[in-house]
Length: 128
Image 1 (cartoon, rainbow, N blue to C red):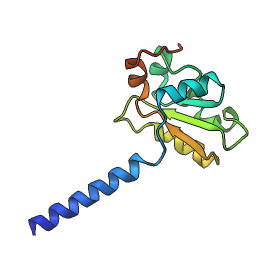
Image 2: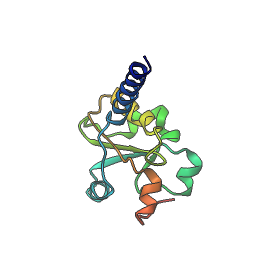
Image 3: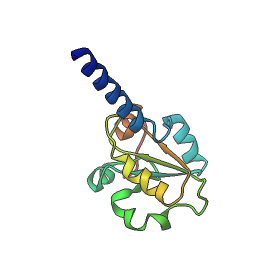
């Protein structure tokens, strides 16, 4: 009976992890930097106003500030690249912005899973 319960718990945890981890594909720092340079992305920071003010990925929108009017801040083309991020790999707050974009009909939404912490650890600059 213990083995059965352990197996069921393992399956449930694995299912939940894969369900939440793969909802939006990851984008690398290098890919995001290129998209920013090419002006081919809308970046959304979900770390909150204080963190945003202290430094964010260049060009990023402050989700806390624009969430009520997000539709007007995103490109007209629903296939445009939208990238959401939050604090780092263990943070899931990015889904608030990603889901909001998805609800507006956007289809090319990605996640910078390293978040602002990974961006800074990679030596990348921020805007303030």
